[in-house]
Image 1 (cartoon, one colour):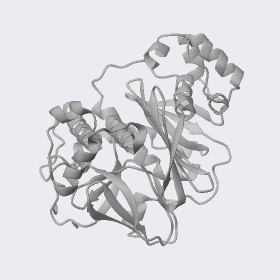
Image 2 (cartoon, helix red, strand yellow):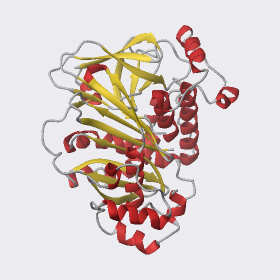
Image 3 (cartoon, one colour):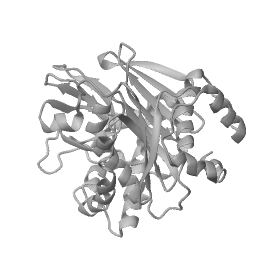
Length: 387
């Protein structure tokens, strides 16, 4: 869809990029849909905008589009997982299961965990599968996870084998994010249960990437595959290996690579101020080499500001990994808006989560979507990933 759109109407692209993409009515959206050959929106909510976009804000091959909303700038924001772990008020611990960890909030403020957060330590570094609000003074709450360090199931150096020490990075791979979303029920996984039972019994088990990948059923394996692909792409882009000798399969240790940090810093220097410069921004969508990748939207501008540096670092890492790829024209604001609306307009599936939250998932023709809502139906986090 994005290739076809990017080749048409160059004049309209220049107009859209020159100023914020403000709310427009259902009639305008329908007219545009007819003009470019797209189906009409699936619901009125998809046709009528309740947000606006600005951008693109570009550095090298990375383009950022900000999502703005009115009335979401006030109120105290929850503490982020990284900050809470640094302060020692949140504990993330092993359960004996590869796919499940436990988290406990010892403090007196809510803590926000974002799907895709990586936690370091334990028996294996993990990536957390769902966003979660951990209430103050909580007991232990379960949270799903995937391993991002294949093969280890023991102490690494002097680290605590039963608990996790930090959370400073996010999943920097669109393929990895897609696998995580699929595991949450967006696609069925025939045969995955048998493989998961094997891993529960032998957590350090390594499974071949070849025949297993062709089964298309094992999402943990898809995450491992994405980790290896990310490490190889970063190595090619920088002309140096990023795999760490302490654990070559660890995505966490690769993301700590000093040479990679220097490459990412170029993007951070140019784009880190966006959240402060736009006080009504609550989220973003990013594109790499002209291709829409993914985005996140948060319940308040305050929470977005707390999380922006972490989001930018992950997006910049993906941009570094894809520096040699073919480039397209940057998506227009209209195209980004259609990406967001199509994801939100798809048919939802809902499940109850710990802490009185609800998880809503949607699968559109060009994207996957997850939304976490409080019990009062107030949404906390929305995540869009291009398929």
